Image 1 (cartoon, rainbow, N blue to C red):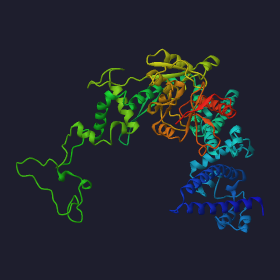
Image 2: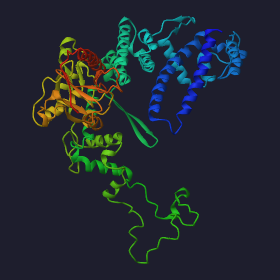
Image 3: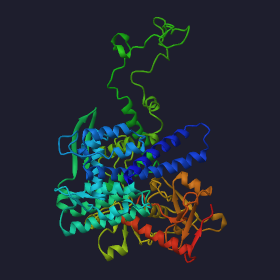
Length: 572
């Protein structure tokens, strides 16, 4: 029996085994540990499957399987999902130069296997990038992204992340241009993407997207950027007025600063009533009349009688009519124009519980409707004044003059825009070294001072737990040295965690590690990280920062294991 026939039988057996295993998970008595173990194994199978789908698509194209004649396709159909050895051998098939059901590999994937056309096209494009291209003459050629291609079949690398990176690079291919310099940029992007995939798998997709966007932005002259920024009205669709806003990164940080202030009840306390009134107005703006006369209601709005003949479903009771000339029943229904307090009650919880998108829009509209930053709205409520933080890597600024500035939201800022931002008010610079150690801010006292809190949030950006996406302004400052045990309230012995991970650390579910000359690191328990590595959360950092932090974490882990790192595990 040929090797390919044996492979078909293996795939058929794997299909049966997987179906049996998944069926067993529906058992109500399945142990929790077995359920978690099964999820782990199935996730690994998902990685294998994503790699296999690419190889299958490439094999279909390379072998010309779309040219199989009708008898060959029938032989495959006869074998089905559980072929015998004889049927597997007979399914080898033959191609023909005559007319067939499918004109190309894409047609076979979409028309015979019912793969969506867009998905089939993506698989073939990814195969071009990671397995082999096909020349105009139909000859195989090297993959378009050789660095990532070498990692596709690496058992220690998640192929889904490799495929995702390849798609993003292919999508940016035209913007990166042509010529030796563009090819060098593509090679560098592949190397950096692969490094992010291997060192920061939890946040690799985010960082790779930012990395490519930054590279594309650097290829465009300032004139091209300025020619496209602006607010573009897109018209009304589905009852909503739509606008497309295109900003420079430095301008975008102003928006992020406004949103942070809106989300922070301390900075927006004076605006809560006004913003809540705006939100309440969205629920009932008085534009639509109430239906107090049933004769004016459309059929769909009229209540249908229940089986017992009453409209409200209460058995044996009917509403009593008011006496002529008497006062109307106070519970007959809400007034046509309820007061603000009544309309607030109709909202889904307090203002802070509204969808972030809606909350941000209401706050932004308040700013736009005011006369200027720091002005008062018509009702006397103070509006938001954005405050922007820009972090400068001093060593990198002196070394290369490029990619040395990033906002506290993790947005890389080109050098020219940094110089322009420094001239504006409301900017506070925070100077860091390559290990994110704060160099020029910090005081020691019982509680963190405002300058300390600002410095910690600016430097750490968000929750310190690896992979957590909670931003800094919604996190809590954490003392790693307990004051009651003689600890000091120093920046180097502080960390930043969201409420959930702050409690988890004090419960001993993971550890913070104080490292001399560096921001704290995290040590996950052995069941979550068998390798016991020191880690950072790089979710809110730019790609270049994430790579530097990952390299420092690797070095620190090696030194720690060798007993050469000045580090202390903080008490829970």
